[in-house]
Length: 336
Picture (cartoon, rainbow, N blue to C red):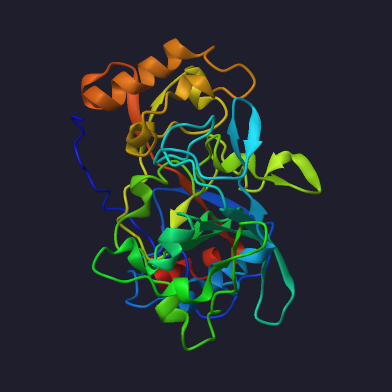
């Protein structure tokens, strides 16, 4: 891809004082802005860094998650299938059963709810044999829908130099689903169970925090079956920045009037869907798959050639919505 890697120099602090933000409804939009704080070395330090924006990092219990179903010819199956041999392989092409996803509302340190914050977690199964060999993973993402603040907590083996200590907490239940409770942020073993991102998560989570595809969206909320467990928060102007990742590239391309940017920003799907050969037109747009092939082709061409060489196409970067608390201290933080 002919894509210049221009990193924006304008980054401002979203927070410069300790304490948790309230659920302020008095907000303003600032483009190209995010926290200056760099990524800490450990997950426990990261949990402290994100607390002002996201509250307390939750304790994950895979047993509370919702099954990610696997289908073959429209029928759910309960045994692993060969790679690519199911209706809804994951973005890596896997058709393994047993994965779970969950959604949790944010909380403050005093236990009060933070409805502006949502956490999503994935307990990804690679099969019973793989688990016995120490292969499985649990990851979580926290997101503040008002400010755009986002945090990614990774499984240890996201860094290939690590072993995955998460697997000592995991097992398969009687229904063949991944189960087990991971250490929480106050547990001394939290740093063995989770790590900070070893790479820029925005390489895949480019347009907004949560990636949707037919595999993971097969898990639906029991109380609202029309909604996937993974939150749908993206709009063309929804705020998004990564706490601890001030220079992470979150740019997407934009073509005014293109159908692919009417509901959300348009990420480069080849960054993740191309791994398994997924064709976006087979499931997008959701209610009329394949009806925007020309629009998608234009977006694809802009990514391939670069906006600089594509008339009518430009880079856009998500905004951050700053709270009144942040603006109050903007003079001290150097926010403009």
